[in-house]
Length: 297
Length: 297
Image 1 (cartoon, each protein chain N blue to C red):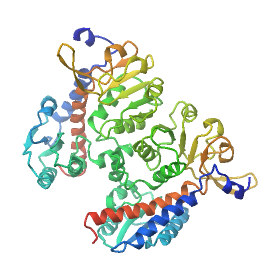
Image 2 (cartoon, one colour):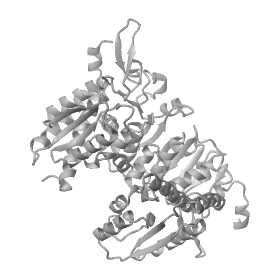
Image 3 (cartoon, rainbow over the protein chains, first blue to last red):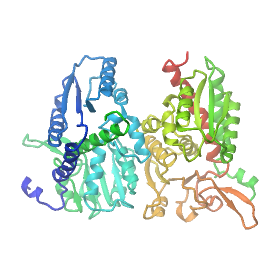
Image 4 (tube, rainbow over the protein chains, first blue to last red):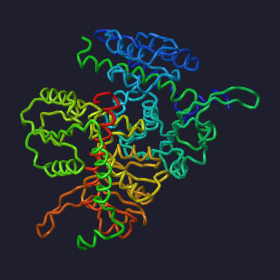
């Protein structure tokens, strides 16, 4: 099946369209913001070629909505202490709207501790434990972007999330668990499955919606999905075909599952583009909160 | 059925026994702590007769393990600002091991904001959003006491939590959601049901363990439980019998359900006593963390 015919399949939820809608909303808010919004600071520690494409996408989205984007690369041998000091300075700077700490970081850096050092009001990625704790309290203002994107994609199906039976496959800290909490806050009945679950299929087969974030190529086949269900695929896996072609695929066998599912997000082009849009939306939430707190005026 | 025969029923998980075991462990640690542990400060704002019994139980447990317990009552008309200042002073005091903010508080007080003001290292109740966020990161050091108690009760059945199918009924911020996260961290497959769930019975009937925290007397009957399952009842409801007798009952119809269940916690005398024990255990976790952080030496 060619890429062209995929794009036109009504069962596929196109991330680009959802992204465009969100970025347009954000751009309107940025354009009328007074005072003007500060900059997003992206921090890479050491050389991280594997995140170059993410950073570039973030920079592009920021440019589209009109938020200044500052790509910093800190030296690979920087100390934890120095990182904390620099983050503190960014926290204190009125010119800085938000801080994005790109991962991975060098082995000697404690990434969790640095995430905690980012002030919750500047935590546009929603990675500070305090931000995540607020999700438990159903205050989902600054939620982790990928989790927020998966909820947004599910919402875009038009299904009522209240009472929806959702099975989350994967319980990572930055996607599975926060997404489960956010979906629960929206009224869904959520089951979180993971590698210790006796029978994932028993759960996924009864679900109105299945959200997958495991990181295993084509883990989910059509036998695991209830006909008509919505399937949100958060996986991003690189595979090499027999002929040596390298491709990016999700955790779901998209071509096979879309014959069964009511809605499905493609990979690439599904949750990914929306994740970047959620980062921009989070940035404006942070802006409003900083304004409310009297940080900027 | 008389209270005496209940106590001897092997299907009932007695909270007193679990409490005694935990308090003995804590007492041993307190006795050998160097420097000696500081005091727990219980804060009531205004007159709160409804929590008197809880505070008394906390004071008793503290006395048993040897932790000083300071019962403070702040004036009902105190301002939010003044509360924050006092909490800040307690945060800064080397003599204070932990802070317990008793609820309810007067209507003009923002309780969430005060909970956030308690330093995470002194948050022995595990109520600060940062403490709750750490649970998402599977760092369950300072978890909300009732949620931790329900996990402890389930563990006391001897069932392996890894792969256990658990249905949590109720999704409150201080019990349902943190308990679900903690059980997931232990390897259970957890479904969180609530008032918008289409069919709670569909879930509860397939569960190896059902944890209930809803606040509705006798909501869960034997028809909702799989034979042999474990039932953890967190509800505390006051009901008046036809003859005018006032009784405390759980969310589960204990007498009927215990004919079906493999294990069940009574109310009163089940999760309640263990909750107080978890507060004491949390206090010593806080002590160790404060020591590690160089706050006390």
